[in-house]
Image (cartoon, rainbow, N blue to C red):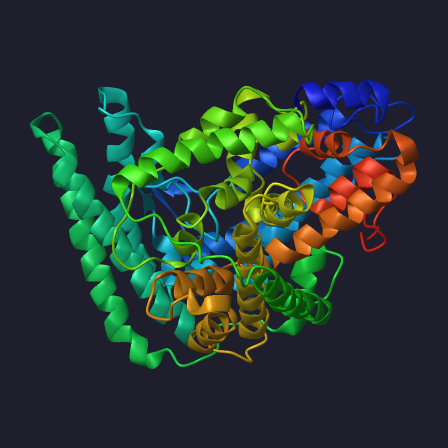
Length: 550
């Protein structure tokens, strides 16, 4: 997996500003050491994984009941660690471990993805996620095909083979595990399962004679996947219950797992405000640009091959010339590696934006900076060096990538192309519309289909097509992973608020570059904890549990 980073910027900050930004140094006057927390973290991560039976993760009711009983022991051990006297960065690490334990607790009490969510059992992924760990709850042991170099060599083929051979047994087990009654999770989960079948088929077609055994196992996994999809279809008419977790559970999850300082109702007000602002600001931009010709999308492979690398070069030059952040050697290659190829035919939402001005979505590509930094500059703290469980990073990763789009607009990146300023507010409107869907689905006020319809109708220009794949795919993810759909905007707001606080704290010493380097130095952790680490002001909502000043 990728590794999180502290890097050169954090080293400077640790020396000059916030001594110990994530470091694991000694503590004075405390009954427990940070090293004790790190050791517990290693044991916790091993415990969190399901037991393997003949290479297959065990999610049966008996195994899950046993895991939940034993979880209490780990929470007691964490609470027994006395953090008094620890630097803030080390206290933050304690809260990261606590949030992960709360995530497993929530899985057992509420989500139960192994019992309610057919998509949980999709474990074959040809393409890389732009997140530190793949989005949503998923069974352990997935095959991340993209991570293996081509052509496949013996050791890599053997690893893929082991993962593929587990698929039929896992799907057989899933038929006994899946007892939930959530209609939307069940129905749309079938789509994810069928996508796995198609991915396996495509992979099998690429395998040559030298991998005949692997190809046979891939085809067997496809057969098992098809049979599982047929079983899901047969069971679907009996799945008639709601799929949302409810507002009370949503509030608990926000506060105790994703460490977000807002309730469901407060988030609804915030994202509706952003949705309204997006449409209003887009109207002003369109009024200002009414005499300009429309922006035509890229229409040929040659144009794509010319404009996308040029967009990366222009973006990186802007960052350097305007001294916005410390530009690292890994950044430009990380973006160039994600250019892809021209695709003809009906465009999905993000392609509508990307093909009109490729620079715009390169700003959202901050994700690839994050992932490259994790590889190139591992974080000093072992707890932040690996991707956090339960997508705890989303307020930082999605919040910054989304916020960075409008931040670059404000920094002047699109002054020479006024029509591209419009695209920023089209993007913002789409994020607001789908966030409302997330919240209302989990409150059981919308079905997934209603959420998709709302998002499509409230996204500017009709680009989030209701007959496309994006709109339902996104809402399905948000239904599986509460608060993910709001993290783009709520995380963005948290970053904007933090920037204002740091500007007031630092006065004339504040620069955007300093702020961004501080932010990156803390790693991919919840924004509330980054704010605590950078400002020294502990968030009020963090509960005081166990011993010590948490």
